[in-house]
Length: 194
Image (tube, rainbow, N blue to C red; front, side):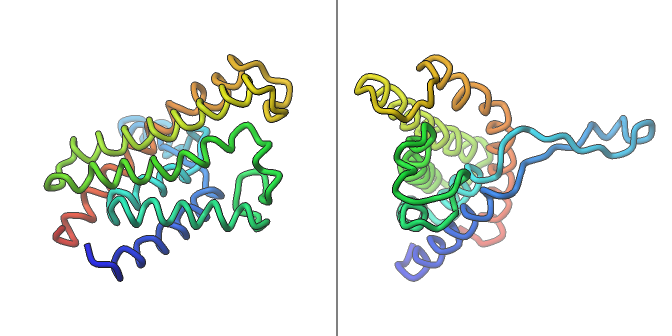
């Protein structure tokens, strides 16, 4: 991919990541129940932020994905309120900061794998899954290191409770978002002929 295209995708990824932070993910009930219950929406308990991270990797590649997330972290650490709980340098003390750091390798891994072969639905799904895995590994590493070094980032949570709250509980909703990203990325890659 050319440098101007990578920069364009990085900007798109930055905007999607910021916007995705404020947009909660929903699913609808099964179509066969629409006649009795109507169309109902149900929250999956996560935002589309991780979906934006993975989507830019699938569409823009590894460099655009990583660059967009580096820009996102820099903007947030400069004090702009783009993170879930605000922004600024004090965000290093948030237990979820490791997951934000994981956006960089997550987008890179997803982008690297997504462009190794021609776009197929199952291959893009695996790319997104490994990107999500990278995000969680970085987040878990941050939680473990902060616990071992006795940093005051866990807000009284035990390591086990931090893992449950920040990795285990969001996973089902994040898998739903990964499925949506896979279908969107596959469709857009086919429409854009790459």
